[in-house]
Length: 312
Ligand SMILES: CC(C)(COP(=O)(O)OP(=O)(O)OC[C@H]1O[C@@H](n2cnc3c(N)ncnc32)[C@H](O)[C@@H]1OP(=O)(O)O)[C@@H](O)C(=O)NCCC(=O)NCCS
Image (cartoon, rainbow, N blue to C red; front, side):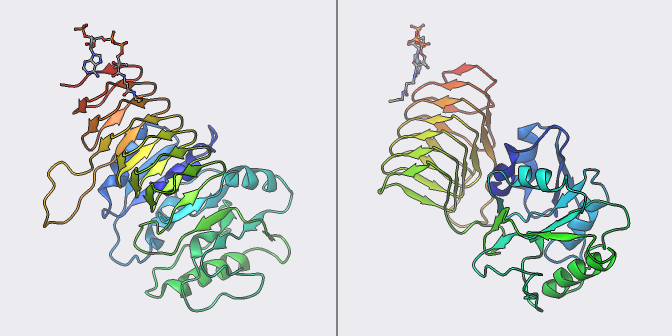
């Protein structure tokens, strides 16, 4: 979710974003459906031979029609302006292959020939989408080797000097840990009160989180205001300009149990919506643009754009 949100606001009308689920994260599908954006294309593709998403990458590449492919794992984040950087650089005559920053190793891949038989973070680059000029990702068991094979075999299809590396860093990747982001990404101007408990979360530009709020595994858009004691758990995505009043409680599991597998449902709050103090939002709900949730309301259904919802 955080990956998706990190690039969503920079998408242009003619961009397309293929999100290929392998069936393991139903939350991704419901999130994409709730976004209701024709540029986002969600498909499920499970392949028992696939490791680390290689089969899913091939599946998407066979369908993509834009000029460049950019691979993004679900624990990768695009830096603001990354897509514009590709557009700008991609206009030069020589097609580009981009490298991207990868933390914590900060390896520079091709330039320093650091590609080794280990997981180097193969999704860190972007290649031109020209038929016959890329090799499918291998379904080899060793993910590092298949990263390397993809890079080398794709490059070998291009005559010397006909493809150059762009050294700009356009993407940040977190450690691969099963799709869970491991830290807070704080965009420019974002502020967290020292006593706010924020973890595994993307915080958009100029968003403020007040004292004693708990925000974990969520995505917060730009210019949001989160008031004291709000609770925002995994599965919640706020678009830009969302107000979350004090003591607002988002839930993410309809039938929680102390002992069972956890299955969070996605909740999406669209741009400009406000949620009054002490409201409780059940999971899997979409709150529309500029909607107003009354103080103390329990939100049990989707709320339409511009609707004022007083609850039951
Ligand atoms: C939802 C809200 C925006 C409605 O404001 P409004 O349009 O000015 O509505 P009114 O005050 O005219 O009230 C309209 C009706 O809804 C009722 N109502 C208002 N707020 C309500 C609430 N939170 N829960 C239940 N009913 C509410 C009123 O009693 C009134 O009922 P009536 O027609 O039977 O008399 C506002 O009441 C609210 O809850 N704001 C959130 C405030 C907040 O949490 N701020 C956080 C920052 S500290």
